Length: 394
Image (cartoon, rainbow, N blue to C red; front, side, top):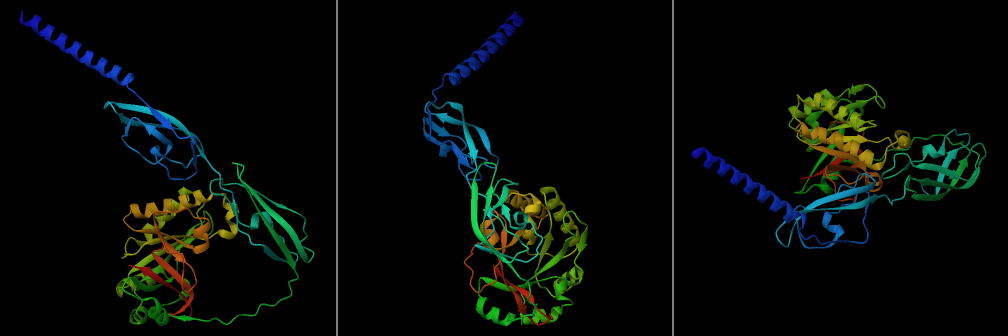
């Protein structure tokens, strides 16, 4: 008798659970869903928009209103959950299209000069890049002869794979190369003058150095008031070349540590991919692991004269830099991106990492930096010859 009662109880429980599941299923299946989308369901490449930005009206509240990934072009299904006005959790899916409507970028003014007899490919020499397309089509319209002195009106045209076109009209000036190189006299900026002008409660003044500064007297640097130093660790011998340690790196970092001058690091990279950038970072980490490094480690990529040969989009270039910097930060250090003002404003994508700005001027209008390299002709006690002088925001 007890066995029959137990079986009946279990059967009732199973039927109850099944019935509840069916009830829940039917409740969700026939739940009221009223979603009105905006008319324009396109998202510009790398633009920051949330799910709610595409919804005009909805009978409920979105559970998780996240930013949509806009780094790949094409149609993209967006599925989200929301609690409707009856308190039921439901799903809804709609489709957007990620598009690229930004023209390629051509680094060119209204005049370009070459010496008579030059044997260069202008379409490759002049920087031609795109935010998304790693290989925009770049052509020059017009005729010219680099063996004949003169001025040639030309048009540089670039088109990406989304059909966006940019054109720059310019004059190609072919000139007779008869001038002789006369060395110009270098005008120096003293470290003490820069301290007087820029030092305050929110800044520190320092320098960055490499093998080019030779043997440095760190005691003299300390007495001169140098508050930090950014040291080149090394680089590679070209793209995918062998690594080399800056010949003065160990000497410089040991002395900086000994004299208590806070140290940052920079690495001159020829990386051409995310993988090679990560490899660079891992090499740097191995070189600095036995030293005190309190300031950021900079990714320094400056192959602008050969940019077209790298077949990188501007987004790809930035992603490569961020791969280096993330690897650095995963190892417990702080990362930063080094570049000049013009490249930061025209080529690099915005990044979450610190910026080391190169802008040789007395007053920069580029504000979003952590470090500012304001000159390359500084002089300071302890170094024979010129040195870069930098300002650090506290």
